[in-house]
Image (cartoon, rainbow, N blue to C red; front, top):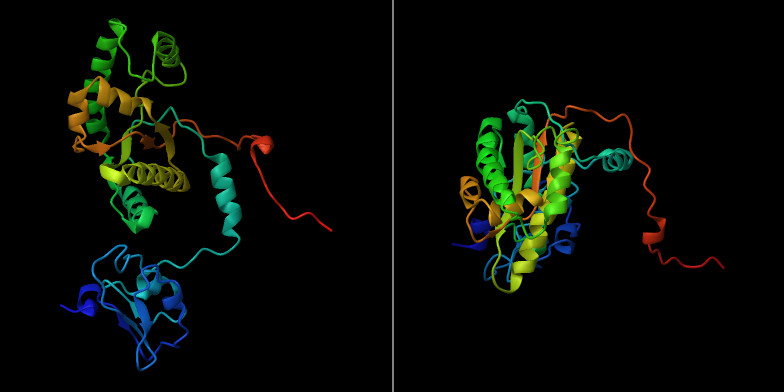
Length: 293
């Protein structure tokens, strides 16, 4: 089977203006001008570093929408946001908070689907796209997992056994927070839904896989906030699931050799914030700018 048949790379010659932008953005360097002057895709060994990265940059960059690949049509792509959206992103980042009190209701499935569809574009090293997403989008299922994990956590605490990240002091403080901040749940903060980015981490690329998972976690959190949901990024629950409650860990359905560290709890917030905070980290920002003459 030829490369064109594998990738379904096609050029609408009635639109193409032969600008070469698709060639200049091709990370795999597999697009070239053909003898007729139109872009074509070269033969390559395999996807990845030895060929096409499956990034679809060629489809995205074409100013006239002449290129299709992998049966994806340019007219079906979302358009870039206008420059003034930078202000919206600024507001989104400044106003995101860790939400530790949620309404006891499921999020509209359509909202979750839209977030997950956008998550297909979350970046990964080498465009490997190996990160998998597990979403527990039914609050009753979350409660089942919570019940198993919480019970094991408390049984261990009574014996003064904690996760590697905790101690008597920290556990006691977290228990105190259940009376106000965490609504009787120091584990999942009462979140009705869970999102977990995970990937098999082995060999020399193991660290890259972990970074990919953490990047995906951040993208999900911002997208969820953009749709008006509350979120909290949690590491303690993953420690509990892996160190104290293998039964609850198994209920996630995530392979045992997959890296999981950060879990995002999300749902409709019980408490809405009126404004962003005013953090100052000037001393931790290092800018090297050219001195004015």
